[in-house]
Amino acid sequence: MKKIYCLLTVLCGVLVMTGCKNGETYSDLKEAERDAINRYIQNENIKVISQAEFTKQGETTDVSMNEFVYLDKSGVYMQIVRQGCGTKMKDGETLEILARFSEYNIKEDKMLVRNDIPYYVIYNNQRYDYSSAPDKMSVERLGSSFSGSFVSGAMYTFHGSASVPSGWMVPLAYVNLGRWADGEIAKVCLIVPHSQGTVDASSSVYPCYYEITYERAN
Image 1 (cartoon, rainbow, N blue to C red):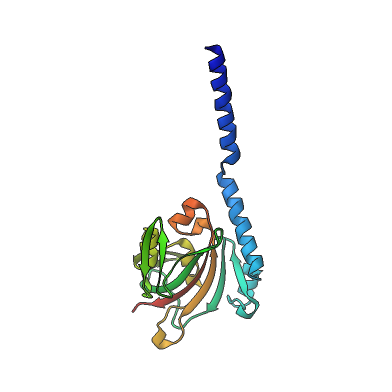
Image 2: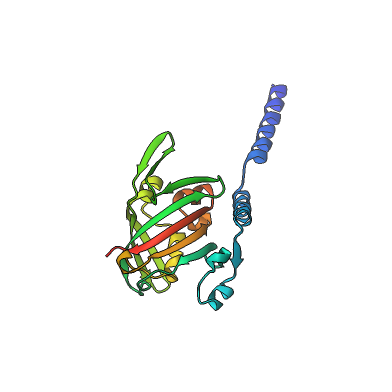
């Protein structure tokens, strides 16, 4: 019995050591995310500028130089492609906003979901068909904080959550909201870490690259 007990003890120890060796901690996952973001920035020849530089430039980014501003508070990298027509959201205002976008998983190098073109994806052995209809979200501004929930669209369907990623709210402090009838609408490119991303990104710790347009619904 002693021999069996000793054998089981050794076996349990080996299993524990193997689990620790092969398992990834949250710290490991965050480091892998940072590495993925840095590789993407390098591969895409992105020029990162500071918030101080961004402010000095009138809160604009030079698209011809492929500039992205790193926003310290959120950890989001943002490029303003078009400032947009219309006006910025006012404090205390709630608006319905239409968004066309593409969502790309930087860590796994794959497109996840988009509504800028009609297409379909296979996810968990299930097919999801998407049209080119924009996503609709209800957004509220209170002071310098923005929060939103999806009313309808591809993001809600794909990720199964009505919560708009915090990263999507970040540009609303800097762009105008108007309608195509009045001129070109706002467009941004974003690199969003998991902490500012979707529920799926948060749980699996992966960063996403987005291209998003924002249009006032009415």
